[in-house]
Length: 383
Image (tube, rainbow, N blue to C red; front, top):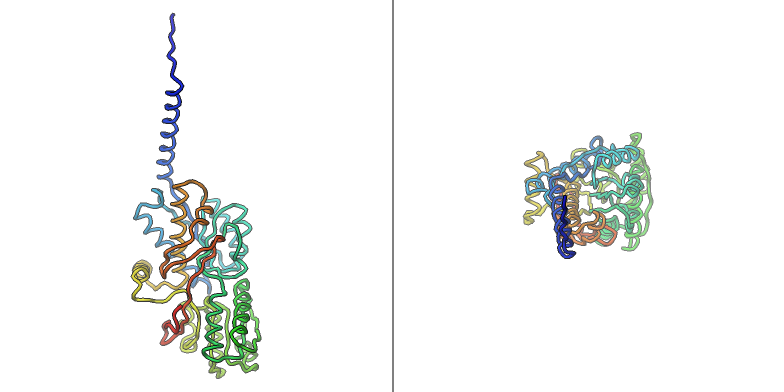
């Protein structure tokens, strides 16, 4: 049998191969567009620190729902996996491991600095982005790793309240009550406050460390503080403990200024503290501004979806989700990983205005000096 062969010119072969590569790339992209983009959330969902974790989880849930209604990320639907870290370092690491094993390409969490610190070795070893809405310890800053955060470090917040106490209110002596739990945050907050208070003219600072596990006798703590006759008391603790300390301070006749770390400024503070928390002072990264259409739309949508008003943890978590979506879109367009895409994003239009990110993924922004009047947050001074 006579056989014949057809020679394909070299140029034609190159074009054919190029066309095949394009077709395969298009098929792969189409396939990826149909795949889910899996992200995780990990925070404390039970107990007294759930006042951060639950609103943050709900805010991320809302962000995912809104994004999926708009077609997802680069054509891929987003699926959210939720884990409870129980405010335990060991549980946090196990929970993160489970989320990563389930396919999460990034985790939004943790809500406290202690658990974030505990999770970092696993996160960096597995090369999965950890994006914290609220971890604020200064020890987490300036690291070229897989950790990013939406909350500014403690220095800006403590400078704002120390400036107000020393230069506006004329306070010269202050006692700082510091909770042992989440000490990566509380001790750092206290140290940054000490530095700022002295810098602004404060003269004397003493510190009282306590632990809320097991539950302390708050009366004894306050008797020790009152014995020092302070003009002001600063409290670095969660909302529940801060509320109890405020109650005991007022019962013991303290009429001076009470300064709270931002961690305490959730609705739980007023629920537990009542009239005793009227007049406390704190610096917060958000304000309930009726003129901010973006913020009001978020609040209205959140209330409609979950039945309660969002706090600062919800705000930061929603912004964290938007940052993650933007990075995932960027990575899909140009290739590469989420970490590299996040490192290229230096500015995010957040719910309360622009958020600047440095090359290490640490955020900066404004703080508003606020107080509680008639059970509501009121602005003393705008950032």
